[in-house]
Image 1 (tube, rainbow, N blue to C red):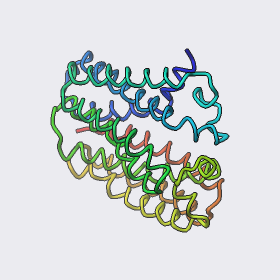
Image 2: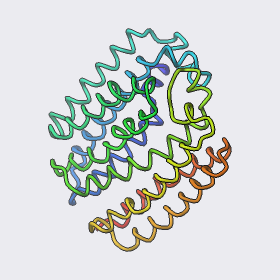
Image 3: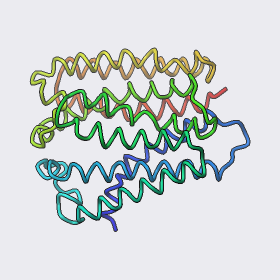
Image 4: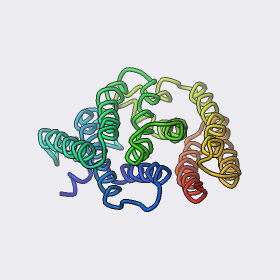
Length: 281
C-alpha cells in the first residue's frame, strides 16, 4: 500500500491542496460551505494524485537511470506498470467526476487541463526541450485558480493574479532543483536548462529575470483590492529577500547556492500566501 501512496507524491500534492485552499479562501464570502470546500479539495487531490501516478508511469524507464528516482515503486519493480496505469486513470476519473458533479464544471475543466497538460505536454517535453519548465509551470499554477472558480464559478483578474504568482515562482524554484540534480537529469535524458547550459549562464539569467518579475507580480493582489498595504509591504520585503538568494545563486552558480535558493523558495511562497490570507479584504 505504501508504494501506491508514494505514486501519488503526497508531499508534493500537499502544496497543490494548500494553493487550492488559498484560492478558495480568497474567493469565498462567509459563511463557508465546508462540505463544498471538502469536495473541491478531495477532487483536486485525486486529480493531482492521478497526474503524479501517470507521470511516474510514463517516466518509469528514465527514472530507473537516475539515482534520485531509481528506488521509486515503478523502476524498482515494486508496482506493476499496468497497475499504476489503471490506478492513475481511476484517480483521474473519480477526481474529475467529483469536481464536475459536486463543485462545478468549470473547476473540473481546469482540473482536466491541469492533468492533460502535465501528462501530455510537460512529461514528454522534458526529453525534447528545456522549455519544458515553462510548460510545466502552467499546470502547477492552476490549482489556486481552481480554488477560486470552485467558489465563484467564473474566472477573473484576481484568479489570474494568483496564477501569475504561482507560475513565476515556480521558475526559480525548479531551476534551482535542476541545478542540484543536473547529473541525474542528464543520465535520464531530460533536457532541463541546466543540463544543456554547462556554465549555467543562461540559467542564471533566467533565475534573475523571474525573481525580478515576481516582485511586481506579487503586488497585484494589493493593487486589485484583494489585500491592503500590509500585504503590499510584506510582498515587497519577501520579494527582495528572495531576489537576494536568486542573485547569489546566479552569481556563484554552485550547488550550495542553488540549495539555498531552493530553500528560500519553499519558505517564500507559504509566507506570502499566509500574509495574503490574513490580510484579505
